[in-house]
Length: 304
Length: 304
Picture: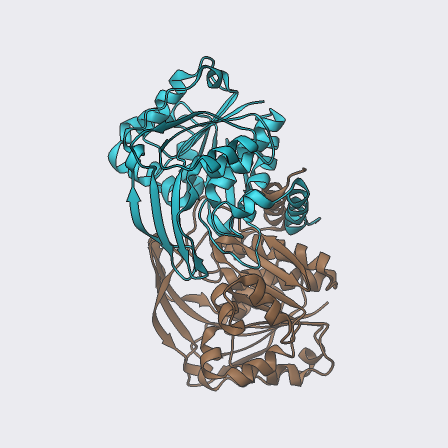
């Protein structure tokens, strides 16, 4: 099955208490795509970069069997750039620079091939763009998952509600779930969001794992307690990549399958944070993933 | 099997965004004892109160089959009193009043019957008192679990290390695990603490559940996402009560049994926060507990 990923492909510069990178490969679609590429081989990526974006990164995507036909290269412009610094606890970070550059005018036009993708992951973008992508699909994907952020709740509320009503899965963090629903309790928040369109709500809780809500059902995927967290950048997107990659692979959108997909997401996220940027995602093997999945099974197994 | 609980029995006055109590029954030993009494019926309690402590509370313990022979009533003195106010997120609280009163001179002398208890829960107290209790036991209990807090790390470091070296299970929160070990990563922190005496370390994470470490094994018990959290007071102690109650009931200190005990702890804690003070612990039935345990099984069950 095919997975279409729409989102940012960018440069990041990251500082954590454990070190500092130069300008490295980043962006939500990058992490989603690379994580998913460890599970499936029909991934289509829609993004925009400037002509400063190195050919080697595009080659890297291609090597990973990611279709890059939909990555638009805009001449004489620069790629999106983000730099940030993490606090000692790695849970909070300060943004130092956000240069939208080429992203300011991003208006994706999907290549013909992309328009029949069966699974669609909408990274955090202007709600209007997310909607435009859905409307370009020839047939409605079997499953659409979207990410968003507080910024759009403050600045594009109606557009956001509009696109939320069109998707199957909303994946947000605790704060976003609370702001979107107006409820503090995550159970109440999820219940409210489930009336706004999606059949599934995922609440991402960083080092505390993720919760999945569907009707009256709930499921908790833990985060793996790790020896060392080097760089949390991209953990949520790697999670989304593992999650959507697994659903696409299984072509099954049942609650039961989605629970497993959450564990895959948690596993990919757990690798992502073990090194700076995308480094760890690029070096792990299927065997590493299976080993990590076994650790997740052990982590929460008990028999009352 | 028998469980000895040593800790505070006190008055609390609690304010949360959802309401305010008057002076109500509180204290760590109270929550541990009441939670454990839902699982076992041979509980011995060692504590100290003033003569302002109502007979009805002592009767309540007795009705729950809790032996109160070791609760010392000091004439002309007042019981320990704590009052606090929770922030909007219920994760943080400000202490308004701490009147040690009778607790200032607490020096428990265990009744003869108590000295052969098979399981021992040492609530958060001066390390010297915790040690004195262990030394009063006629035979070494099969399992000793202790709680502590940052305050003792700041003021009684050597005494604390001494008692930590004598116990089997240390149950602390994240901050305490970090301060005690000098490591930020919980995996590293637990590994260090396991070299200090205990065979098991439990890291309590409030609304994010609890982690159990033993050798190279780890286990994660989630917290139940609840519709409403009314009052977090006593959640950690109810957790300890469920945990120790289950171990005492099964008389099994294996890692496998301890995993189940953690789930029992999480279940009792999840009830405790649903109403103010001990109210909810006093109204639930065995059937309620079994139903909640089933919810925990569902919450983390998946089959890859």
